[in-house]
Length: 389
Image 1 (cartoon, one colour):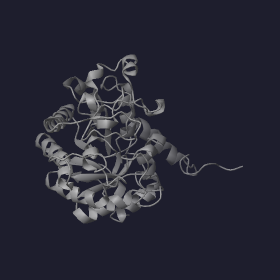
Image 2 (cartoon, rainbow, N blue to C red):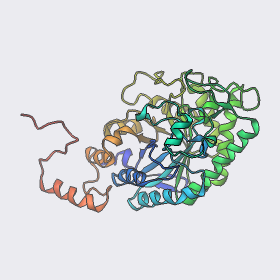
Image 3 (tube, rainbow, N blue to C red):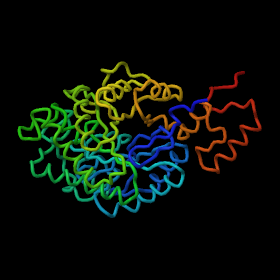
Image 4 (cartoon, helix red, strand yellow):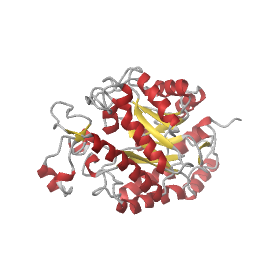
C-alpha cells in the first residue's frame, strides 16, 4: 500500500519533516515582557508529542513597538533566546522540527488580549499590567491611517525608520538561528505591519515604499533579502500572506509577490487571508472546510513555489485529498489542534498507517499500541460521538 502523502517525509533545503502536518503559528499572549514562559514550553511540546512534522511557534515580535499585547512573545533582545531555545530542544527531542514566525503588529499593536476585549490599551492599562515604558510602545504604520475608525491613529514611519525596521527582522532571524530553530516564517499577513505596507488600503505613502504595487512590496522584499542573508542557507524560509484581504490586495498580487520572493530565497508561501478590514474574506467561497485552499492552489500553480494550506482543515481524508490533488504541499492546522493536539497521530490511524504509534513518544506509543492490539473492537473517542443507547 502506498503511504498517504500526509505521512510521506518531505525535505526542504537541508531540513526533513517526518510528515506534512504543520502546527500553524498561533498567538498565545502568554509571554512576560516578551519572554517565553512554561506555557510556551507546554503548548509547543504537546504538539510535538502529538506527532506533528513541524511546529511553528507563534508570531514573535522583532521590536518592542511591534508587540500586539502585554503577552506577545519577543525576539528583540538576545535575552529572549534561552527561553525559546528551551522550547526548541523539547520539540526536537520529541521528533518534530521547530519553526518560528517573526512579525510586527504595526498599527494593530498595544491592545488588550482578545479574551479581555481586544480594545486599544491606554497608558494606565499598561502601567497596571507592568508592560514597561509606554514610550517604547508607540503605534507605527506605513501611513497615519487608523482602522477601524475608533482605533488610535498611528504615526507614519519615516523612510529611514523603515530601513531600520528591515534590520530588526534580520537581527531577530539571527537570534532565531541561535535559539536552534530550523524553519523561519516571515509574517506578512492578517493586517500586521508587512501587510499594512502591501495593501493600498493602509499604505498611502508617496515615496518608494508606497504608491505602485512594486513600491508597496518593497518593504516585504527587503525584509526577505535581509533575513535570507543571515538565515542559514540550509534552513527553509516561509512567508505567510493574506492572499486576499478584501481591501485592495488580491490573489493576483499575491501570486506576483510570491514569484519575486521565490527568487530571493523563500521556499514556502503560507496561504491565509483577511485581517485588514476585520471580517473574513470569502472570495474563495463560503467559510467552510478548506475555504482558503484555493489560494494555495493558485499560487502553487502560477509560480511553482511550495505552498501551505490552512483554514478549517479538520479531517484526515480532507488533508490527504488536498495533497493528492496537488493543491498544496503542506497542511497547517491551528484551532483543530487546540481541540485535539494529537491530530497527526489520530490522522495516521484513520489513514491506516503507523500501527505501532511510532509518531508519538514511547510513553504514549507503548500503551496505545498495546490497547489497539488487545482490544480489537475498540473505537477511539475521535472516531464517533457515542456508543448509542
